[in-house]
Amino acid sequence: MTKLELKAVVQRYGRQTIVNGVDFRLEQGSIACLLGPSGCGKTTLLRCIAGFEDVSGGEILIHDEVMSRPGLRVPPENRQVGMVFQDYALFPHLTVERNVGFGLGGMSAAARSQRVDQLLATVGLGGQGSKFPHELSGGQQQRVALARALAPRPELVLLDEPFSNLDVDLRERLSVEVREILKSEGMTAVLVTHDQHEAFAMADEIGVMYEGRIQQWDSPYNLYHRPANRFVADFVGKGVFVPGRLLADGQVEIELGVLKSGVPTGCGQGCRVDVLLRPDDLIHDDASTTRAEVRLKAFRGADILYTLRLASGSEVLALVPSHHNHAIGEHIGVRLEADHVVAFPRAG
Image (cartoon, rainbow, N blue to C red; front, side):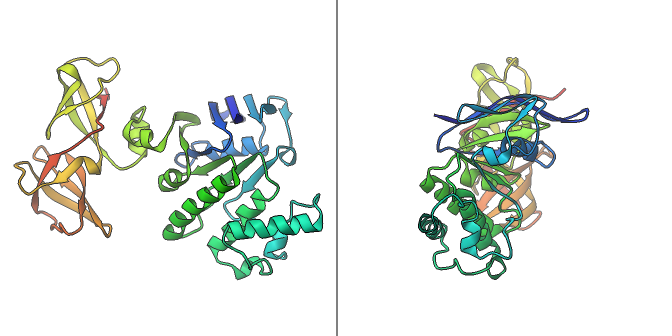
């Protein structure tokens, strides 16, 4: 069953187009993410879905009912949408349980109390209902905000950069926990973020946005291994482009060897291409005759991310177990081991 559908949605401020013809469909129980850099239109699009903004073109449907189109905007309170904001937006003068139960005025006191207790237990805050927001940590406040959004059992939950005020470790842990909570409640949700780690941890499907358009709507796996264009390839994950030449049968020759790749559209044998190499496409191998100079290193605990200079002067990335601790300027052996090769015709 389709819970949310956008059809050619456009939003403008004066002559400036912020959202430009966005289409996607989200099924019941799915978690989607709008991922992109600042200014790409993702938050504006979320506000259109919530009903805070008019649309200049297209339609937004929730549960097959039109919520927005030019000249029509159903108010946010009539959309059965739960919203989790970046700054939590809790009521400081209300206790945790009263914050969570704020939108449950139509229920009996007993039913409201039961729903609040159930949600506090679900988000890991059982027994904390009598506390006030200022007595909680940032992560706990975000859980309260989520519980409040889920309390009325909305048709759709929208999350606007919900973890951006938290430290990195808590952000990663809470994104996994929030996914589990949404799944346990059977909720359909849309997350907006610029952080791909959050997107990968939470979402079943991701729309990468740039300049107001969805560049690719796909699974996290496909976005990483099968990017649709150069922007997605460059934005998702780490990687560098190295020059190559297309041989027969979809093989691509680069400085490090010959790879098997899908033939780039409109590009035949002999075509000059740019090949995307991820850090995990290069293996540290002392026995290899191919040597590369260590230019930079970033220690990451279990791994070290090396920036390596090849003989041609091109630089590549390699993720190496941290017990291989090499000095800047040292030459190390590397070999190519790329299963998913992505190549695009050379720009220009």
